[in-house]
Image (cartoon, rainbow, N blue to C red; front, top):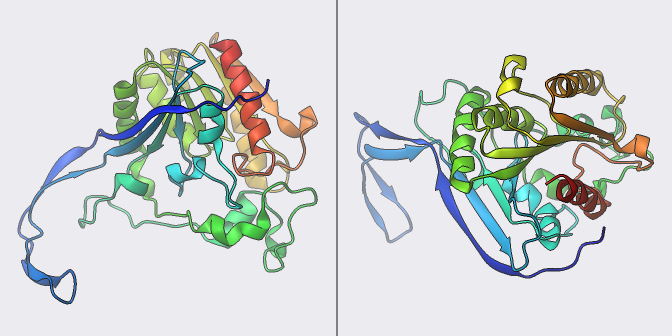
Amino acid sequence: MTASKTGIARFGSFYAGGRQLRITGEPVRSIAFTQTASYEYDPNGLFHIEQAYVQYFIPAEQRCALPLVLLHGGGMNGAMWEHTPDGRTGWAQAFVDQGFAVYIVDNVERGRAGWAPFPGVWPDAPIIRSAEEAWSLFRFGKAPDFPARQAFAGQRFPVEHLDAFICGAVPRWLSNNDTAVTTLCAALNHIGPCLLLAHSHGGEVAFRAAARCPDVVQGMVAVEPSGFCPADAIPSLGLRAGLFVYGDYLDATPTWETLMEKGAAFRNALVHAGIGAEWWELAKMGIYGNSHMLMMDNNSDDIALKIGAWLQEHF
């Protein structure tokens, strides 16, 4: 299958989910926006927090009946689908070109969803991923080789643009998984019946949301997921089919060896429950050199075409 360029008929965005929060008892203080604009700022009042921001792109020629929802991984936001660190177009464009209506989610506290700067609303402090952590965890290269930026042999990730990549790292609150599931459900219910493609940490959020929204999520693509729904939630899934996609160098760290074992066990549980779940290890398919960030590797368009063809075959 090859992509045929298709124009965008319309695009837009909306917010979904979240809750209202009223703040009281905080002191009023003088602030200055600029050297000439100052006033008394009252931080008390009614606020909306924990919403998702969803941007959508509807192609002029829609060749799949179901829209495709893209969910980011941990410490990332929806911008990860828009472009690659070396300036190529990302999976959002690739799937629109294949005729999918594409919805990109910034979930709770990420990107344009905003976050809650109020003490005690979220019990933990945020964390953010360093370049060194991304280097080894995302399988760009071995940890000792980070200072020299010496990547794995055959690595497809554009490591010469690592500095551009880490610009996209954003804070995350580890306590927000449950909230992220609830908010994603709100976004999915707004969109309606759809296909859901999730990356890394987004796998847990996506599978749990799919179990809560069985009439909405018809199919899923899990790109190197690091989490899943509980086993007792599997019967609640309404998936017609699912696809797991993994890159290369999966034996590079004990972390990934463990994640692969857990992923395979979850996929087997889906099959046992009667859900068709296909498993792709790209290196075993003759496609070598892919990192954890398949949507940014130098063959990202080819992988998007393969995934798109699978989706159109099954849906």
